Image 1 (cartoon, helix red, strand yellow):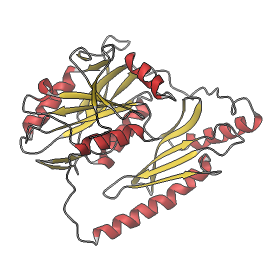
Image 2: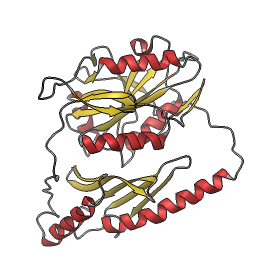
Image 3: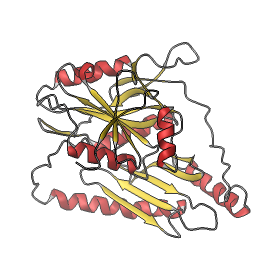
Image 4: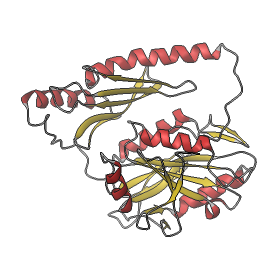
Amino acid sequence: MFGTARKKCPATLRVFVRPRLTQRFTQEILSHPKVEVGGKYVGFIRGTKRSERLDERHAAMERLELHVVDYIDDGPRADRTPTFHRGDTEFQIQEFRRLEQRYPEIEHLGSWHSHHPNQLRNLSPGDIEGYRDTVNAEGHNHDFFFASLGTDSRGFASARHFLFVRGDRHYYELTAENLIVAEGPQGPTGSADSADSAGGALGVPAPGRRGPVPLSVPGWTDSPEGQERLARDRDLIAKYGGLRHVVRSDRIAVTGQVVWAGRVPVTLHVLYPSSAHTTDGLLKVTVAGSQTLEVSLTGDRSGDLAFALKAVESIAQCAADIHHRALHQSAGPPARGGQSGSRP
């Protein structure tokens, strides 16, 4: 199929995987011999996370290190059959945001799923399309997506591994020289730090210094209007524990999650305009659940955090209404095609 050509990864790319993760991967397959299973990879990136041009991303890929420390389970409402797999997106988002609050540098690195009930050794067209959509999404925090495919009961030992790159019509298969199964960096006490994840202890490098993100972005921090706006937004962020400022490719953004009505998690991504005097921002609000609602907005209000937070209430209420109507309609058969679900 045009646009889905598989190529070999650069020999210098490294993906480090914790031994405990490989054991969980294999045990999950052995524990569910008749249905596809999977999870969402979490960990850390060492190297350039975002680049403007594809040639820069290819150069970054050659020096890239992904430290995959664990995965978030499918969750209690996952949809799994012998030919189909989709995780519980709402559960996975909640788990990821919980980890993100403790470890601000943690990233959603990718996902894995299995074809062991039928032992198909290739990604399905649905898998490939889904991974490419995810890595190209504005809300995906970096230019790469690491995907693994379990093919039989040997689990991780016989799995195949792939890398998808933002804006690239090809995808890349890892070889043995790219993948290293080893314990990760040690914390200051001599042992890897840990946190409770969906599947147990999550070993991670020691978290970096906490506190406000230092911002130095031309068009914002060098103008009185920009400084005033940033100060006002910092006060807003302080009221929502799940939000944070980030800077990527010389653009400021606010990203994270807020909870509407005390029960509905809403993912928010506000990309500031390129300067305090322009209107090229982006607002993206996603309410995930049995019915996922995603709203994107450009224009003069799109980079306005105060407006975004007010919009969350209306968007979440709309998602709740859609869910309510769906409950009163007859459910059709689930889609098929092997797609493993959206990112946390």
